[in-house]
Image (cartoon, rainbow, N blue to C red; front, side, top):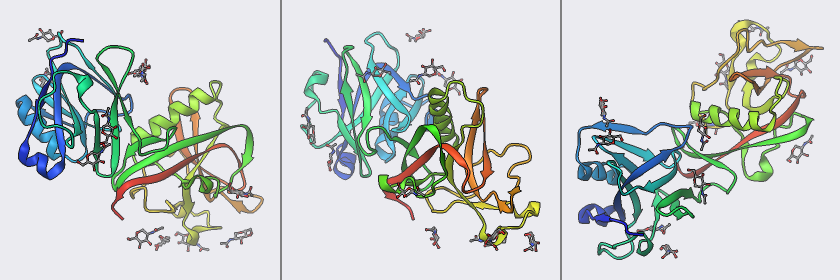
Length: 293
Ligand SMILES: *[C@@H]1O[C@H](CO)[C@@H](O)[C@H](O)[C@H]1NC(C)=O
Ligand SMILES: *[C@@H]1O[C@H](CO)[C@@H](O)[C@H](O)[C@H]1NC(C)=O
Ligand SMILES: *[C@@H]1O[C@H](CO)[C@@H](O)[C@H](O)[C@H]1NC(C)=O
Ligand SMILES: *[C@@H]1O[C@H](CO)[C@@H](O)[C@H](O)[C@H]1NC(C)=O
Ligand SMILES: *[C@@H]1O[C@H](CO)[C@@H](O)[C@H](O)[C@H]1NC(C)=O
Ligand SMILES: *[C@@H]1O[C@H](CO)[C@@H](O)[C@H](O)[C@H]1NC(C)=O
Ligand SMILES: *[C@@H]1O[C@H](CO)[C@@H](O)[C@H](O)[C@H]1NC(C)=O
Ligand SMILES: *[C@@H]1O[C@H](CO)[C@@H](O)[C@H](O)[C@H]1NC(C)=O
Ligand SMILES: *[C@@H]1O[C@H](CO)[C@@H](O)[C@H](O)[C@H]1NC(C)=O
Ligand SMILES: *[C@@H]1O[C@H](CO)[C@@H](O)[C@H](O)[C@H]1NC(C)=O
Ligand SMILES: *[C@@H]1O[C@H](CO)[C@@H](O)[C@H](O)[C@H]1NC(C)=O
């Protein structure tokens, strides 16, 4: 591997943040569920690197003419492409040697943002580094929320189960609401993968309770659902289907719980269900790192 690697050191910032930026010609593959965090037009590579260093959430950037900043729920991999006319910058740990290394192999590609650590992992393809963060358990997916970082995992079942509000608790987690479109897209995609012949009957339990003062009150203005914890921002990020929440009652019992319902399309929405209805799975979530309470 003959890699051209330039290590940019910002000594003052380095003292404060303990971070460095390594740059190389290449491309950066963003996750499907996000776009870049910010897009700054017409600045230099050095200025872009400074933006990344001073942005605590930044783990990498891509710049040609414009500087795009990526946070780590937005990355899959970066690739060194010698002929590329874009520059990739990755934020790595500042604790190792301050001299400029001549190859990736002599560089420690670990880093951390807030309390979350991550690394760029070498793959079988020369110059391809996959991005990996260790702060969520392996099969949980990290998302940036309004108040902090958050791990989400859907659990699916091959049979219908009676809704259980405590399902997530043994995984040190809670039923999760949605904070942004990326989370909805992720759960939708996972659900369609799990149930390729989905008909809409396959609801997933999500967080959300009818306001208790509206129990047994089917007045439309009483269709007032609330998250049960502070990990989702308010107002709720929910896509109600036409006519939902319906506040229906069956045999005197009202629909006081929430589910995520999906169809091929993509079509999905939140639906109020009876808290003893059956679901095909759960969306669990837990906060990680610093969390603004
Ligand atoms: C990165 O460096 C900081 C201090 O500079 C250290 O606290 C942290 O543990 C390091 N992270 C990793 C993943 O090595
Ligand atoms: C991203 O989306 C495209 C088009 O839907 C798909 O072909 C590709 O497999 C997706 N990549 C990942 C990593 O999800
Ligand atoms: C940079 O941003 C400007 C304004 O959005 C856009 O017109 C231009 O095509 C961008 N350049 C590149 C290389 O993406
Ligand atoms: C950068 O890449 C684009 C797409 O391949 C190409 O059109 C453009 O001419 C390249 N610019 C330079 C300076 O090489
Ligand atoms: C990179 O740094 C981390 C933390 O300092 C350390 O645990 C790890 O062994 C180092 N990796 C390499 C390849 O030096
Ligand atoms: C690295 O990520 C790419 C997608 O960008 C994926 O196709 C590949 O399997 C990953 N490799 C490893 C070793 O994780
Ligand atoms: C609900 O889930 C919790 C956690 O797994 C379990 O302890 C409890 O027994 C379940 N309740 C019912 C009624 O199955
Ligand atoms: C329930 O709704 C009532 C009336 O809209 C409101 O005053 C009250 O704050 C809500 N309860 C909670 C726990 O938010
Ligand atoms: C709502 O009505 C049901 C069925 O009559 C009853 O069991 C339940 O206690 C009522 N809930 C409240 C909060 O009034
Ligand atoms: C039902 O809710 C509506 C709207 O909040 C309220 O005006 C009405 O008094 C409630 N009815 C009962 C019986 O609590
Ligand atoms: C959410 O935060 C508010 C304000 O800090 C607090 O009063 C409330 O008890 C919290 N709710 C929960 C469910 O933790």
